Length: 253
Image (cartoon, rainbow, N blue to C red; front, side, top):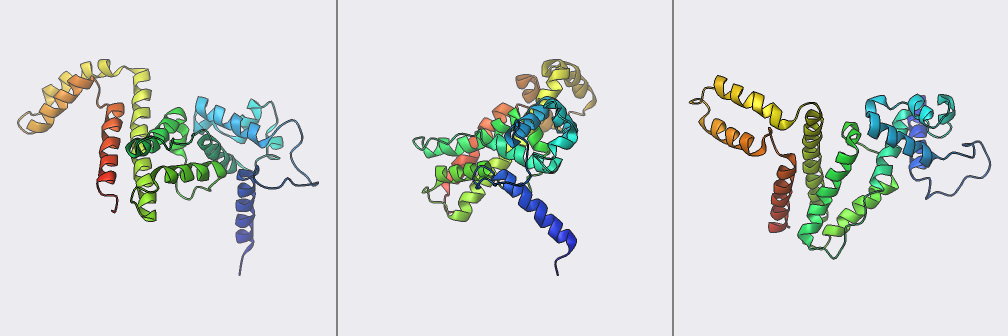
């Protein structure tokens, strides 16, 4: 039999879905609700601005309320919890992803799927700290998925393979974005060139060359070329091209 806990979970899930799909659902007549003068959209926008500026660690209902010049308790009229706010923020960010032009060659459409995911994460690094597992689907994320599927529909992939292709491109873009953001944060403290000038010679001095002949040769070449431990932008361009070429070479996989 359903328990009180099950009923509460269902109620919370229903509330979040109602908020996510609020613009698609009929407006409620009468009853209690948010006061005029502020909207859920405004609360979500304030949450995104705060997370972009200060990181997700600083995101609290109290902090968002302060951004809007309100008391924390009044914000619960619009969103029931920080967790619900995060769900709304993730979907709102996805709404900024425009359609992929159908006139592009299919290879460029596939690359665009990964590029746009990466660009979104670079613009909003806090998204990397939101678990992608069991994310509640809102209209913007569903619309993006529909557009991604439309971009690769008809190229010979089965339905499962289309979903898998999008997942692989998304995972690659996410991993590369994580590295790029880490590089950006490190560079804010010490430039890669300065870091390499210190660590490169020290590593050469302590690492036995005869034990790591290939790693030493290739690592030195990479460090001298990039003047950094790695090249996230170049790695993304290379990697996404290889992934896409592999998908197109065997669309029936």
